[in-house]
Amino acid sequence: MIDATKAILADLIGFPTVSADSNLAMIDYLATRLSDVGAQVDIMKDPTGSKANLFATLGPDIDGGIVLSGHSDVVPVSDQNWSSDPFKMLEAKGHLYGRGTCDMKGFIAACLAMAPTFAQQARARPLHFAFTYDEETGCIGAGHLAESLKQRNLKPGLAIIGEPTSMRIIEGHKGCYEYSTRFQGLEGHGSNPDLGVNAVEYAVRYVARLLELRDQLQGRAPENSRFDPPWTTLNIGALNGGTVHNVIAPKAQIDWEMRPVQAADARFVKDTLRSYCDDVLLPAMRRVHPDASIETEVIGEVAGLIPTDTNEALRIVSELTGANSADVVPFGTEAGIFQALGMDVVVCGPGSIEQAHKADEFLAVEQLEQCLKMLEKLGIKLADA
Image 1 (cartoon, rainbow, N blue to C red):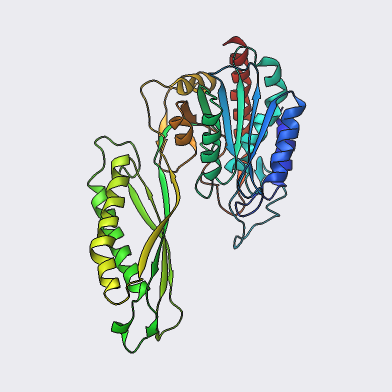
Image 2 (cartoon, one colour):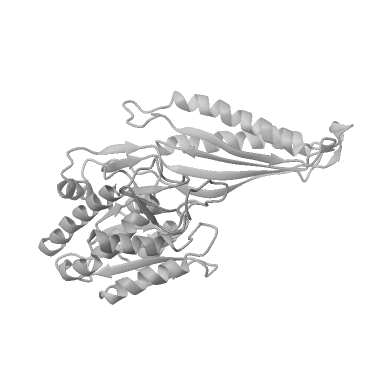
């Protein structure tokens, strides 16, 4: 089975599914392989028609199925110094190199390799495959998939998200909220700054408020929080604006994110920033230029995965892997989206997050073998459930 999985993974790495580009060729490949083993396959295109989710089902047409989920997109390779072609898988010294090997085409390849076996085993309980687009840019595809499942009244019982966890079971992670805040001021000559509205100045004041909030969030950490760090974090990703030294900057943009450990923190940050803009920044800007504005675009607000006292996914994956504990992590996944649909969810997949997004990304063959063992045991449960 490992040789078949590696061959499929080599095919998947050959699809350069960087988030900025189409994933349709890879989705068609997945659809063909799953259709060939008898799966009912649905391809759900995004509004542009250039990207798509895939949702496929083996087994009976009933609720309570098991979802195996992964994202098809990968992060860019530009400005990275790779030792080999990132879109041609290379095997060396027990490692499989290539963009997406661990994040997370290795898991998808293992699912596809097991699909013919699953097709014979999924008798008592359905098995679903959910492969999405644009996870790396805000879990956009998973959000669209969730809406589609709700509209069709499909109700799987649990989901296993195969993000790279070194095959550890993850029962909780922080949310991931990403924003772009844009400032529109008034251009003018730098020799008389009072006659213009410097968008960069107001963006800097906004950043300063974000940094104050970052400090305050440390004091809001829930008691006995298991996260590292235990509080909600804020990060300023980019600040852009202005053109030259002697022109009052008319435009500026801040790209920022927060990783909330609890929904109340997200509300606290957003409410505080809204009041700061409405009561402080905008009145000052509009005294000079009535059309000045501050607008925040929501790039993505992905819910965290909340640990629960009862979790069938945790119980089953613990039985499959032999693990007797579950962890939490600070990075985000699509798991919270599936949990919001009423499913029990865990994150468990091959590879280490330490290799994700880096040059010479790799997946250890031993990790892929562990994943296949887990999936082989899952197949037995599908038949005996």
